[in-house]
Amino acid sequence: MIKLGAWIIIITSGICFLYSFNQLVYHHPSQCPTTTAASNITTLGNFETTIIFPNHSTTIKTNLSSPPPRPPEKEGDDHQSKLTSVHHAKTKDNDDDDDDENNNEDQKEEPTQLKHIVFGIAASSALWENRKEYIKQWWKPNRTRGVVWLDSDVRRDSNEKLPEIRISEDTERFRYTNRLGSRSALRISRVVQETLKLGMKDVRWFVMGDDDTVFIVDNVVRILQKYDHHQFYYIGSNSESHVQNIIFTYAMAYGGGGFAISYPLAQELAGMQDRCIQRYPALYGSDDRIQACMAELGVPLTKESGFHQYDVYGDLLGLLAAHPVTPLVSIHHLDVVEPIFPQMTRPQALGHLFESANQDSASIMQQSICYDKKRFWSISVSWGYVVQIIRGVISPRELEMPTRTFLNWYKRADYTGYSFNTRPVTRHPCQSPFIYYMSRTRYDRASKQTIGIYRAHDRDKHPSCRWRMENPEKIDSVVVFKKPDNLRWQKSARRDCCRVMDSKKRSVLYVWVGNCNAGEVSELK
Image (cartoon, rainbow, N blue to C red; front, side, top):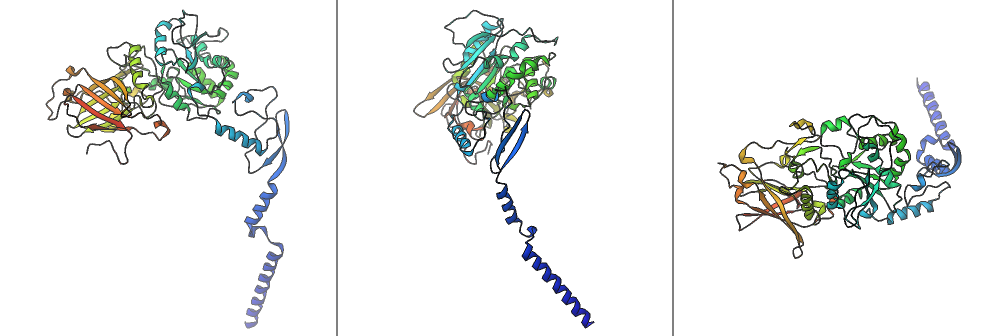
């Protein structure tokens, strides 16, 4: 037994000696992966390879620490060379110095401004005399760029502050088989393409709209500044009608609300759109034809909820008083809704709205919610538009939800027909809101803030209420103080806070609106 144990020890020691000797002499790679891997990467750092594309066999020097090379262009295709004024397609090898120069150019490029945006407005000659009054409200002569595209010529007045007018190309060569629609959809779908062909300089974005679409152009700029105009972007929003979105598609930007297409995408669209249109003769409108072509290009809709199609009828009060926390970009279908301010024509009401928008366009229609703790009132401020005072405590969760002062596109009082949450108009007479529409907005240089005066509307229609709380009918005007905040959308989105201020006048309610302080909450303590 002793001899057997000794032999086992001797044999085991020999095996261990041979194993250790093998590791020292041959240095198996699995025992030192870091060193070996580093050696392999160093070896592969620069090499030549042949990458084959159709009609090309190109030798490209590749560095693994750099991005992969771009495929070379096909002969005869020059659309890539036109994509941007900063980036140029390259058919020769690029070195790191060239990449650095391009990066420096990108860094020096100024942010998107109004001068970089071109509006394409689809209009009808039959409706031009009325619809042009809408365009006058938002068009800024010598600042905005764009073209109105009509189906036939109209009488022109050189003194009117309107965009250039052009006649659309003939579209008789295209098929149109939709029995419910109009062939004008073919013409309108080509507005971006035809505007691109005009060859305007220094263009980054094309914004499409109808002649009854009103834009807040400064907010158009704020939205588009967020996106890289060198890339393919198709930006807009859906319909307010759930049924409309189902019939057409939730993937589509509705044209009346307006949508934006980046310059390189417009070029790509122009190169294939006429062929694309021929493939969809049965589609109804222009915007679904645009979306069909975007689907073929593989470009999805980037949704921005400030573009408003407004497929509704009636009073927009409920929608505008609870605008989402995003810049108001557009309002559409102004002919089928009531004027946004009572006792005014539609153009007059829009002009009245722009009195506030011109003071603080970033904050127009932005909602604030606060409470009068002494009188137990809930207060909702839609800046530049309306103030509502409601007896009792209504939670912010409810107040930020639009009240159904409107009907959906199919004129049914069906709350399931909307593509967003709504709440009913209250039937309790004591909870009916007291409404104060904006009467005047001015900028006070001494305090560096805007002062808005909101006047009572239809106070006499409120029935008596036996609730044991003060009646808002004593308030005949609301004064709202607010500092303009042009940079608010460069920060994370948040609803403004508001505070009720002390007042010696029982007939006037003073409210401050602005950025929330740390720890500030919309609550009744």
